[in-house]
Length: 500
Length: 95
Image (cartoon, rainbow over all chains, first blue to last red; front, side):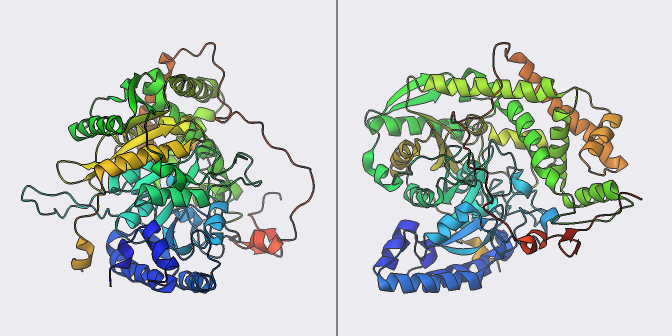
């Protein structure tokens, strides 16, 4: 018997349809794998094996009777930012401890209605604020990847899986689910994908409903999948995306069958390479990889064009004004009255202040304070309004680029994965992780990260493709070409199985 | 932009987060650093630029103003830390 957890979504789908494996067997294989791995990797904050087996049973019934749905019997992980009916949802914050929604997020409903099985809730940075999954109230996620030492053996140092969707990326890379939901406000799908050798796509703003997802920065947040292959990400996104009357920013536009786009290739596709993305401090590995990516696309028939996105240098400071401003406003709801943690005080305001001081972690407090500051009287114009104007310029850069190219190719991150603890006390160094990804959120565009190589010390690296609004299909086409050329990058050794 | 301790305390009060003396000190430096960074935005000429309001140029959808939901008081108070009947309970605000 092959190890069922190593299957891709596409392979598992075939095996289920051919009755070579049952949804129950497949689900049980993941439940067993999680039990072994989770004490070491901390990817799941809550597992739901009973629910999963119940869903799998229904899937087996449907597979037998021939009315299988698109994701029938496929076990997935669900980021803890997605509200789950009758299953505790905390956004990995102490302030939401014990919060059990009475409703399901739209993206979640779409997946379960398509037949997918939920294995549990995945760890993430608190309120999705972080780039390393170290701000979680449940502790950091440990990446399944480890550096190779000079002797070629794996070192024992624990690395970050990226963030904020670090539980999602680690779980997919360690075969603890077939695929996972994730969210991306400044890079939280693509950066963890790059750091773990997985594929992650942030679709166009408005493609997936935000309803039932714990809000961080509402004008930037988007849901998307993290998966093992480009095809798997295409399969998942098709089911996750929908128009939703409950989210006024969700767009009423048909969701194409992205799988059909995969074989279309890139012949004649115009690929832009933004010159401003050659930044200082970029690792030589990433430089080399970027050049390789250019050669692969060229060899497949694409044409390469240098483009300029002159306002790129303003992207990070713009993001760190706009995102905290929206966060401070969104997080005002956590007051110890309607849900979540409450710490009593001498009066109402004291109770608010005590609850929020005890419930929010350090990074969340930092961002709420920054956001409060830039929105406060006397500073609103200088910071917030200014940032929203610069955001217009950043979007305009992309609009101009689309006059001459169809898609942009960039690195996903400036460096491979780093050690746990390495950047935790230096917010500015942590924020720099998102240098290549934030612009995409600022402009509402779709972006995909696809694994493309390995660093000198054996860690995965990713390339990012950025597309025109609602043109995810072209991203999947180009990503497939890169994947075909680069191959797949699997964790070399399941050290967590022997370390017990 | 230098943020002093008084400003940190004022902001924390506005944000309804109680901070210790020790936190106030370290936040002074951290917030100043981030705001210094935001000052870089002054390098962008925005004199004729409109602030962004939404990334996708579509009109905000409207619906008929009608009741489509309701009678879920149990659900609404289900996660509240303190409830009496269907009311949220807060510390006394008026004498």
